[in-house]
Figure 1 (tube, rainbow, N blue to C red):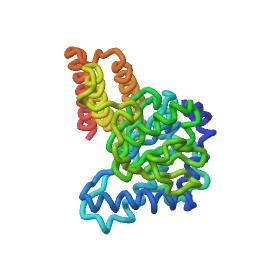
Figure 2 (figure 1 turned 180 degrees about the vertical axis):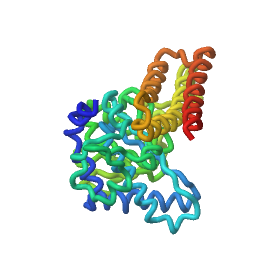
Figure 3 (figure 1 turned 45 degrees about the vertical axis):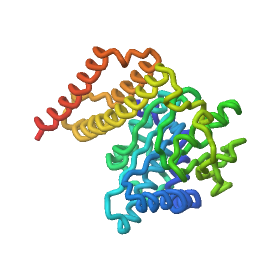
Length: 330
C-alpha cells in the first residue's frame, strides 16, 4: 500500500519544497497573510483561525501551510495573551487523494530540500518515509468535496485553491469565486496561485500580490446574498433547502469529531504496531464514514431518527473502544 502511495505522490513532491523553504512565497504567506490575520485576531480577542484548502490533492500543500501557520503563531506568541488555535478543512474531489492526504505518510524524497529542523519538528522518520506528527495532524479535517455542487465552509480567514479552477467552465469558475467570497470573513484572503484568476469577479476581491494571485475580500455595498453562488436568504428557502443547510452544519460538526477519532486511531497504530503484531487499525475508517455522510445528504436519510441514533451509537462504541485500549495498556 505504501509503495503505491509513493507512486501517487511523485507528481506533487514539489509542493513541500515550494512552501517550506525560506523563499519568496513562504515569506509572503507568513508575513503578509498569516501575520496580518493573526494580528487582527488579537485585536478582536479571537483565538481561532479557520482555513479551507480546496483541491488538496495528496496533502503536501495542506501540511506545508499548516506548518507555516504554526511557525508564524509561535513567532508571535509573545504578543498573544491567549493560546491561538487553528482549524484547516482540506478537501478534494478525488477520494483516493483524500485517503492518502489523511494518512499523512510520505516518501523521504518528498522532503529532500526541506530544512532538517522542520523535518525533525513536524515529522517522524520511519524507514524510508515520513509521518506527519499529531501536533499538525490534529488541526486538519480531510473530506471529499465537489466545488461545483457541494456547499462550502463558512467563517473562514483564508482559502487556498491553487491550480484547480481551470478544470471548470467559466460560468462555474465565477460561481465558485462568488461562493469563496461568501465563505470568507471580512478581509479574508483567497490564494489562487500563479495560474489562477478571479476572472470577472474583480469587484469581490483586491489583489495584494499579482504574481502569486493572492487576494483580499472586498465588501460590496448592496450585494445580495442571492448573488453569492445562488445562496438564498434563509427566509426565502424552501423546507428542503433549510433541511440541507441544517444537515451541512451537522456534517461539519461530525467531521470535527471524526478528525479527533482519526488522530487517536493513527496514534495508537504508530505507537503499538511493533508491540502488537495482530493490531490492525484501518486509519481510513473515519474518511469512509465522512463519505457515507456525504452520500446520505442526497438521500435525506439522515433525518430518520433510528438511523441517526444507530450512527451515534457506533461512534460512541468506537470512542469507548479506543479509551478502553489505552487504559488496559497502561
